[in-house]
Length: 360
Image (cartoon, rainbow, N blue to C red; front, top):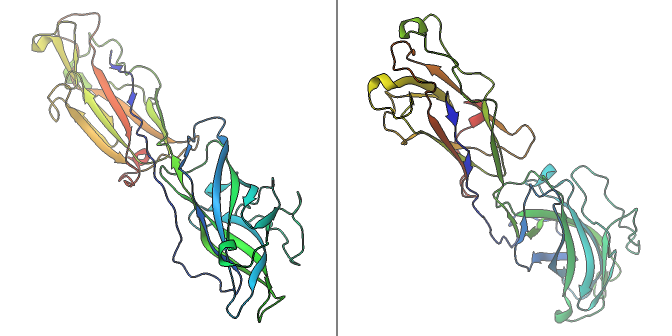
């Protein structure tokens, strides 16, 4: 009988602070947003947490653009939506403004102003339109007219549902769409609309979430005492084809495999060749045996794998053994066995992985 040892998986904590602006060209308006930046410690998100998280607040510094020729942005209506990189992966996120600090008033507090890709967007014009539960956006009415009043701090509640398809260490960037009104100067009373790509990048630490287990039965050849080595060419003995290692991961991962006995089945206390039976193992597209990897406990297979994703299908990695020697002529024993150790480890966030391991 061939046994699989308990699968080992080491979780690697990953975190980063991603702040700042994209250099992509923005819609040109005389009023609007000059920048939205995060000013908080990284949020920590575990995609496998069944509750996600909903109690995390983050402060966004919002600065208004003021037109040349005098005047200021008086009223700013805006909402957030996914950028091209985040896309559908952001579905289910909620970004809820709670309060404002500075020389401004906030309407729309308590409303989720995030709109998923392809969703119906709110109506923000005319500029005096008020946000509501059926028309969700944030309205900031600036009350100051000097440089010190150009930036206000808005506290957001950030809600991330469980099982978001986020890669480990992915920063969550959102585009902002806005409408704004000018007070004073040459453009007094004008209302303009615009958008800014990657206007806000939330600093998010996505844990290197990895879930793995062995599925199936023991890799067992059954009774082989009467099987001769010569008969195996015409009547091969293989373990079940339904055994596999299953992996879900938010990032790339590595897999290693080692055999305690160098891909030989040992009887208890094995000391001579008659106490050992050779077999071959196929895993991750490779065939390994006591000829290719004779050293006991040495790493026989190492693979770098692209992310398995958190989808329920994950990565299925089949594993199957083929008998190379029969038990006939070997020293009798109720059991012959080996122990395989498979280690699945998350890779650092910047490593995208090499192989589509489920296809090997």
